[in-house]
Image (tube, rainbow, N blue to C red; front, top):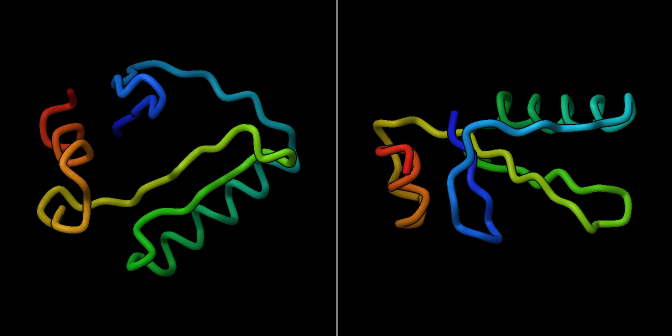
Length: 79
């Protein structure tokens, strides 16, 4: 698991998510989409007002060619 704060470009080790039941169901739907269709690579999960967003990426440590440089560093080195 890797977590990146896109605004500060810093990796995070511990976060808390506060979600409503509706949001949890929506999140599950997006995760299932990734599992069923891995070529998607990522999905964007947004709040109702689109002010907050979580990007969920599915990766294989042995195949990172479609990721940008920053993502590769985060995945490989956890930095």
